[in-house]
Length: 298
Ligand code: NAD
Image (cartoon, rainbow, N blue to C red):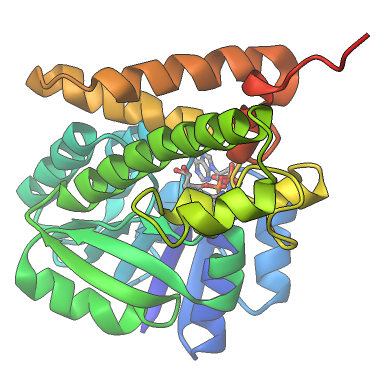
């Protein structure tokens, strides 16, 4: 299969490499010359612009861009994909953006004769490199079937979530819950330790009781509880606070558009925002527990 790939950053670069490894032909473009050169070295063909990818005779185009503004520019812009693509080419956007923007772009693509899927991922850069991402797909069932073998080269779980935009709905709902539950675990762990409990013993109780969740069990925010969690290496690696902040912003914006209250989601967003402003945006989001740190006694 001949695949066009746009957006070769932390996620898109390794994803496109896995397509090459699976034997696909890839024609790629990125505004970053080093990112593009890296993929060309791995066997991809270089395109000189977004329009050049669209005109390269590709069967499918995959995009992995930072945010909705980039997605709209790449698909709908003057030199964008829709201005150059022949009808019938399948479009797959794996960027994390708000569901309504995803639906708007898919509608414009359909009017041009191009089926489109929203296909955001979870699994981070580690999953992107290992080819073990989870894809959450919104769009028509027959387009999902067409995309499945391609996405299988980059991911382990490829799930059809329903109509256009529903992949992004699944992604924002899950990540909003994750952002909230991490703060809950940070608060409970901090309270328990302040009241004299050993952090590991408390985590063990929570993880065999009703408070158990991914944030307590796999990514516990208290240092020393889990050897391999970011908390035990100064909150380096993992999922950055600013990326969590972006996803909570998407959830709040999507909620506003349908007038659905997200009371805890909005509060969580504000807490991560204040924390990011204090200079912690690059740390794993579990470092939000620092908000609860006690001053050492004088
Ligand atoms: P990134 O910033 O590393 O990469 C984005 C790439 O897009 C860059 O190389 C940039 O040059 C390129 N780009 C921007 N505008 C372009 C244009 N007009 N034409 C061509 N290329 C263009 O971002 P990332 O970490 O790879 O994330 C990509 C998406 O995946 C985001 O929506 C993010 O929220 C989502 N995501 C990221 C992670 C993660 O852990 N990094 C996990 C899940 C989902």
